[in-house]
Image (cartoon, rainbow, N blue to C red):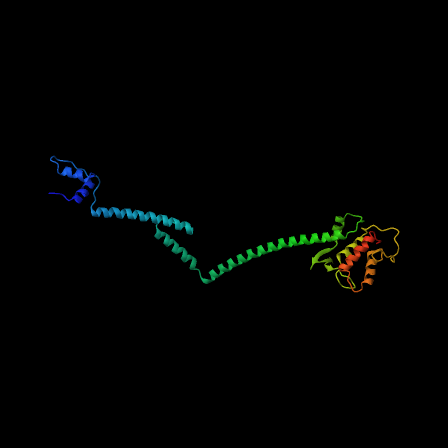
Length: 271
């Protein structure tokens, strides 16, 4: 009887030999020895083996997933099973959302207050920095203005005079105009009620405190120079200037220009 080739091949694979070798052994005149190449399993045994491997793979995957989820949510609990993780996660959610409405409102109000405080602190810090920069800029502008109007012949250095003058005055710049205050009050011209100009007040102060050398041999206050204004003191000059400019204030550009011209002719004035 001729054996089926497919059957021969299937049987040969169990013995670890080729189909030709198995055919030779089966048709041999002498007894031949055959040894199984591997372990044979019944259908039930194969099902049991495959089921075990599946369960092992499932457990390994669950452990990896549970580990990743614990790390993601920051949980600490015993157990590697995904069911244990889900149970723990469910408990955490219940604790979080089981609070009554008043408790949740209080938490939200606390968060809003913290955010508001942080915002206000940042704004305050920015305002402080801006105020400091603005103060430095104004101070430098005022110093530059004072340096430009200090007469040449003074008894002290320019920087010392500015320091002394500012120690007795509160100087500020408002709407691009120099404002002078003493004891919190703005210095104003008594006739026009306009703020006194920086150049006028500073030069009057220099004369009053005798920081400008007197000019010996000067004539009376009826003398006129090239500028067209008479006077051996700043107050005399101001009186004469106002007579010639009755409609203008001492806090004008014209006054400053005329004053500088007069000052150039009167480097030393009588206090």
